[in-house]
Image (cartoon, rainbow, N blue to C red; front, side, top):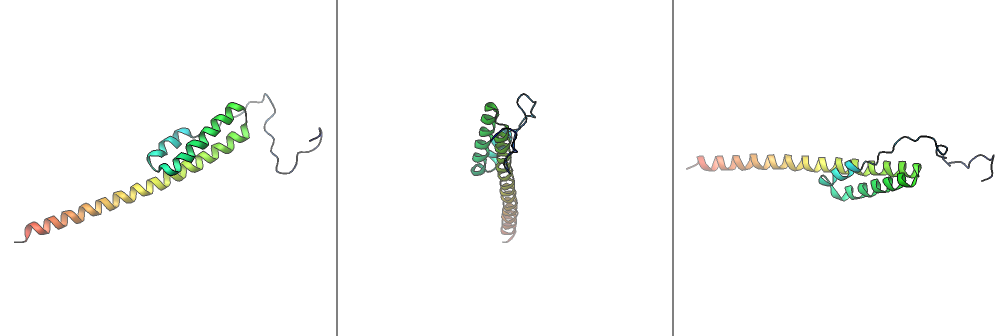
Length: 111
């Protein structure tokens, strides 16, 4: 690109060198926490959060922001699916206990 020429369409230029940048949240804590809910989607979240931290260390603000959004997406999916899975498991367990108690109660009262 020549000086004085406008950037090509779709090109995003970061802030000028030396300008203060807002911190990028890597969502590493959320990604690690989501391992306990649904690990198959938590692993890509952890990998994206690691890419975010590496990009921040390298000074790549745009790459860090993209990796942060990717980590947030995967951690959110892992949290939602994991919460639904455990919620369903709890409902099924409660129904199982109620049916079991009802079966034991009816069996003990018949002679």
